[in-house]
Image (cartoon, rainbow, N blue to C red):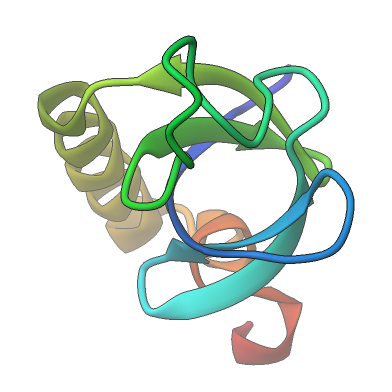
Length: 92
């Protein structure tokens, strides 16, 4: 099963890389598939993306992102391995 985790773009880095925040943890993510700027040339700072294995797979709206994070946090209560996805391997 593949799972995508919602994260908010908080910093653009070199090339197609960005720093994305997921549940307070900042991760480096590749934005090649969604682009660093929108169709109007505006940077994607503050936008939400669905992250899987270090790549932003798609853009999502904030409501969908928050609902998905809430569902994953509920899963974490019964399946602790979900915590690695949300909070990083070091917080397992």
